[in-house]
Amino acid sequence: MAVGELYLSLAFLQKYQEFNYKCFCKVTIKYDSKFSCERGLKWRNEMLDTSLLNTDRGKCEHLMSKLETFMIQLEGGDKLRAMKRLEIPPMDKTPVTYPIISKVLNETDLEPLKPQLQLYKGSFLLIEFLFLIGLNLYCFNISAINHTLIFGLDPRDHLSYYHIFEISGGLTVCWCISVLANFHPAMLSVPQHLHPLLFHSFLLFLLLNPFSIFHTQARRWLMVTMSKVLAAPFQPVGFAECWLADQFNSLSPLFLGLRDLLCFYTYQISWRDMWSDSSLSAVSLDCGQYSMAVTCLIQCFPPWLRFAQCLRCFWDTGHTLHLLNAGKYFTVFLMVTFAGLYNMARERSTLLVEGRIYLYIWAMATCTGVLVTVSWDLRMDWGLLEGNGLLKDELLFSQQSYYYAAMLADVLLRVSWAINILLAQMKDSAAAATASALLAPLEVLRRFIWNLFRLENEQLKNCERCCAVRDFSNIWRHLEKDQDVPSKDHHKIITRTTMVKETKLPVGGTDAELHPCI
Image (cartoon, rainbow, N blue to C red; front, side):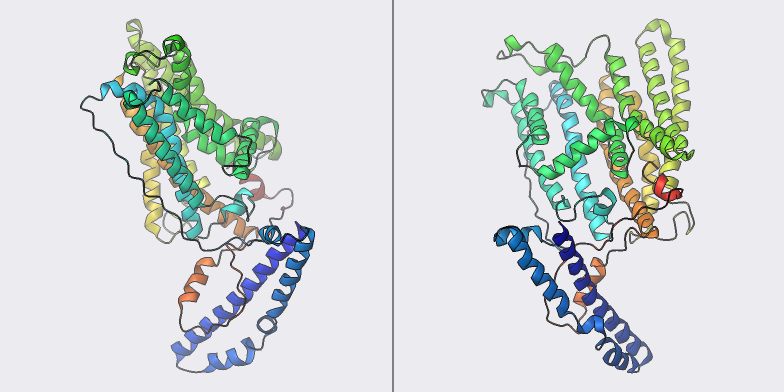
């Protein structure tokens, strides 16, 4: 490990030597062009070309060659394994695209298909979420946001955006095959009721299988982080745990979909008559008399995780800002509670007055919750509303219009999220179920937008604390294309990002203590 770290550091130094030389060449060329003189050329010949940083480039190559020989000896002469250990993360790769052509068989009557679609709703949200996570990583890559440092990932062994696109694309194909097989059970000898179970069992196998396949390191990181999220009140909280718990808040319909799946195979399926010709349209996905209470508990579970994390952060740091953040998630408890009380009163004709009161209280709690969450998103999570219009002084994304569009989208999608809390509990209304199914993907889309600006804000904080430096990979691409800059033939090591190891700030620093849970 020590040899690998030293090798990576030398690769960074070698890249900096090339980058430093070409940047100064660019500056001097622009200077001579601007002022119509040759003083830039003279300075480059006298100072830059003769500088020690430029003339001693061979030392890095010599040391790296020695480290390669040493690593081969450490690996018992296995050169392939040694070079794999010393592999430098690539900076440029062409993403692999998988064109997916799917045929959807049109049905004139969609009513018989609704039970099947409800069983697949949660897995559809998961696939959408994975695809948008891949899009997040792509945006981080082109915008110089060092997410590997922010999440504490191994720079050599982590999933990139094209890996996530591969996973989401493969799962999309499997999802479509399962849905089509479910719609046309006569084509296969498998009972119609088994197709959703087989598909979701396959997803569970991909996550929990003990074999070294399907991105083992990434799955292990996810499982460890999930266990830390579930143990939030009992151990310190980091940024990755807070981020994952926030993702769960947007995936609440996914958990409700898993509940429907469990209820269906527990209460509605007769395993003895599995091979009969019974149709899914003839059964209900209701869990019985406790269905409403279970729905409310599931909707409260993701915000409870973040609520517990905020309390733990307050216990560790003593900052009252964490209590304010916990209060933000407490408003979700109020929204879910009064939405449940309203729906229970609505189902009973003798409680119409109480139902109207609960609806008014839910509306007030929702307005308060949306106002608080939107304000926190814009000011604390994204770092906006600090100047430069309604933005902030330093921006990583190229267009200011992106920020204004994201602010507007966050407000609108937060409102749709709040309405969906109420609609998801109306099990007796087909229109409400349809509207809830349409609003659920919008919340996942809002989380995609939130991830972009949340990690941008974290990257800027890391730069302020000297935990990271701005990535020069994009500038490097422009310099490579510039024909005016002289080039030299030498060994090139391509790196993905420039970073320095994170150092702990003294106890009492505000940002270092506040940023994980904020």
